[in-house]
Length: 137
Length: 137
DNA sequence: CTCGGCCTTCAACATATGTTGAAGTCAAAC
DNA sequence: GTTTGACTTCAACATATGTTGAAGGCCGAG
Image 1 (cartoon, each protein chain N blue to C red):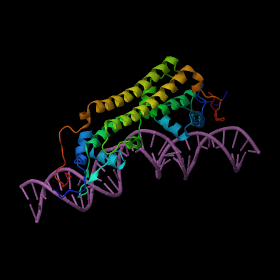
Image 2 (image 1 turned 45 degrees about the vertical axis):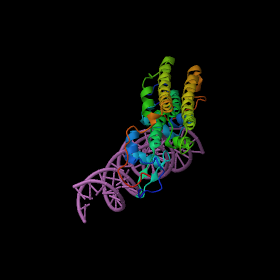
Image 3 (image 1 turned 90 degrees about the vertical axis):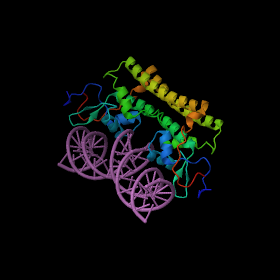
Image 4 (image 1 turned 90 degrees about the horizontal axis):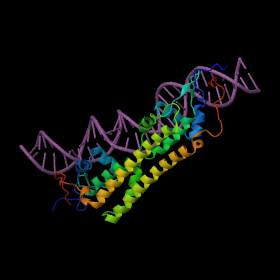
């Protein structure tokens, strides 16, 4: 019976609500929407309305950022989530996120191991030196 | 026999040399020095001179950045390296870096597992709703 | 009908991580 | 002795990730 706009049921949360639920500032919620991490419908008076998943996505994103993923990369991975994601949709996303994090950690470990097992990898190959400004000590 | 300044032996590489060895721009090398990732001595004419380790540190830092560590955090970890690091010094640094990366990945995995095993964790607890601007669908 | 509160957009600011360009110094080469 | 090339500093710009504040809209309460 409301004057209501074309907003799917479930999309009832304001920016402030989502911010509180996700533990971030309202400005951050708007930022994430701008960058495609979350999606909103608009009321007749142009206010954003989110569903519960928005806060969830943000919380996951904050943890994902800690392993070096950019907002853009996270948004790309989230793009695999349909409107009403089933558990296996979340599974795929979770696997993609963790795989990426592990790949980066593995790269770090591998590189460090190389350095330690074969010191040459961390040395300058050809003896390139500075042109003769005084100082070869 | 040179006009040479007080530069320890081994510190013979210019900014350009280190940049080439590390695969980064000279501007980045200066940036990293400013932020304590690497250290330089200066020639009598004020030019930076690095040793081989500078490029090594930079290459490690670039990989570490990919797992979410900031330049500051990496510099802090590198602070444990003495002037002429022995293998065990590098070991401690390597362990610190990998541990941090794994802790962050573990946090991500744990959080995602919680979401999947207990859906409520990703729902809004108390039904906070937006005040009545039209639109409850 | 005004008031308070939450919303909107937009621009400015802030930090991290660099890059680019201008202006000047220095040493080596011609 | 002038030119050349790499170096120096410093300021401006660029991108990512946000925050803050100004100016205004919309709604329910008193």
